[in-house]
Image 1: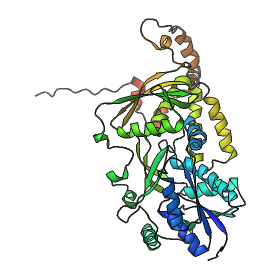
Image 2: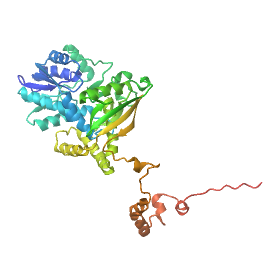
Image 3: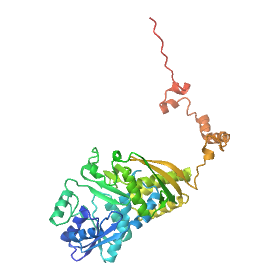
Image 4: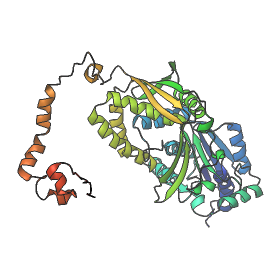
Length: 432
């Protein structure tokens, strides 16, 4: 295996098992001087501890950057405005963090005059694609090293033993070998017993949310105010993005809201069982969609749903730094001009219900919707509307006779149903 003695390699460092082992392996096997780069997206509780652990693992230097505000403003909030949920459930917490971490990695490599960067992603996951593509877009001259998919080749149990031999402190054990990634927007858990899709997740998997059976019996209403699609207030109190999400994570977690157990289609072509905890993300996505339903037209909602799926797939597949993303983001921003108002959400033992909506830009009119007094809808106008709306149908019925002779076979409907509109079965009393 080729060695790079004296060269500097900047490693994206989470402080977990894989990257801690990677520090020592890069030095021992490839001869690199390793500089670690850690971006705090809301999961770094002890910055000094992360740096000490990196140095203890063999790093020459350990860089930690507080990127929480940047993460929320430039990555999470745009995805919320887009309603981006991968396979309509996953709020993309890990996927949204990777392009930012890759950007920090490239910046650190430039600062250290390094020609190599590295990450601890496996060869069967999505994160390797996200890191490699982001680095390729931002700094195509850099070489990416990925120990986990070539060279290191250790099982998790072997990594644990390697770490112990090299004096690297790790939290993972053979008894509880979960792989965990978390940031402000959510917590992702996989591996270990979770790889059995029939088995219910053990209680120790969940750290942010209580079991719904243990949540308070009394529901909790929370009012979220948004301005142009961005959350700005919680129960009337103006909060910055980080503080607002932290408070909602705690509040939703106490009521058991935000658990997701999903069989997910990875980019590399395999299905994976993933457990997510994302109380704030689940609550804010529900509130944002409810407000859009009130202020956007039917056509805008219909088309934006398509864009949301495309946007989510793009983020999940690691294509953040692309022209396609820029184009979609421009459309999404345009749709948010009137997405301002308040949404009241009820949290109840793992459940979430939107129970109130109001907006100065609402397209909902009580005078038009009511069936009571004050109804301003012109009922007589409906006759002409139905006549015009149904014109193509009646024209086709006259000229092509879709519901005439021969149509029963096509529609697999008994002819007697088409002829009479119903079928009747009669019973007669037998004579003695």
